[in-house]
Length: 129
Picture 1 (spheres, helix red, strand yellow):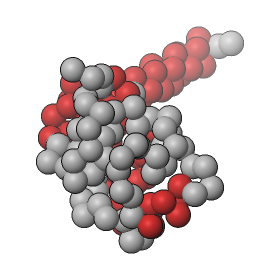
Picture 2 (cartoon, one colour):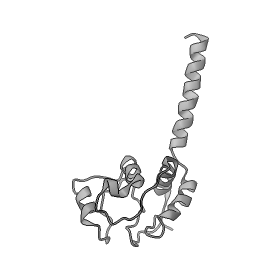
Picture 3 (spheres, helix red, strand yellow):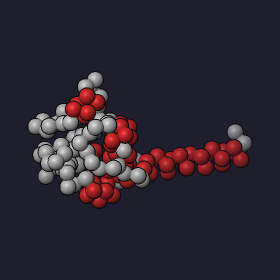
Picture 4 (cartoon, helix red, strand yellow):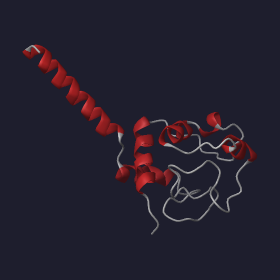
């Protein structure tokens, strides 16, 4: 490999590596973003509020948190066994009503991709207190 090609390859590696670490999100920043959600949800207690607890949401089947009365729209959305993985949560957090028309969730969504990445990092690390 020529020296110039090695240099370009190394530069590309650095750029991609930086992008991947940035895309991972920051749980501490996500805790701050979660304050937008905290009036209706908790992420550190298995307790429902206006919305269901989000503790353990990543990897959980849709509309299955015990004791929460989900809308018929959300129940139907999860009826085929969908799971809240990071990709699905990212899309949902961008526009809940677009993904699940008829959901009870009145939150319009997060517009900044970094906020979504950060809140996902927080939700993956949030534990009961």
